[in-house]
Image (cartoon, rainbow, N blue to C red; front, side):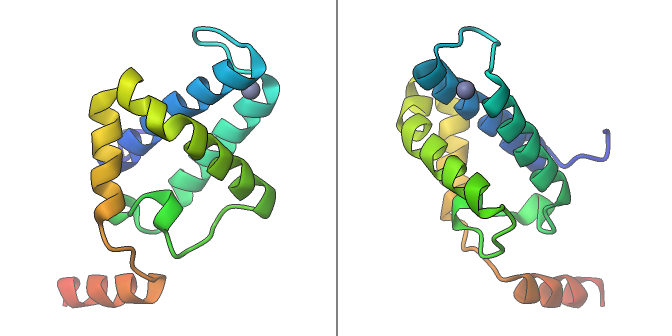
Length: 122
Ligand SMILES: [Zn+2]
């Protein structure tokens, strides 16, 4: 757990907040509650983040060139982002701004990323 990058930890927090906003709005849950469908989505998203090859350098998932989500999970992610994105600014402005900022990073392909890493360690 302690090996987790702050960047990934923040991304998890952002997704966690977004899924809650979405679930509360669509499925009538409250507070820390999530319906089973959204719980499943959230653990899937966390699992993908743990496996994200970019880790500290990742762009926002919506811009990422490596499409690591299964198609139906991607659809759900898009729906959640569309609904919760604007609402994030009200609920958690700090996280929302970070997310906007991360989204401005140029997404890189896995190949570019690996070449860059190789250069850095050479
Ligand atoms: Zn839900």
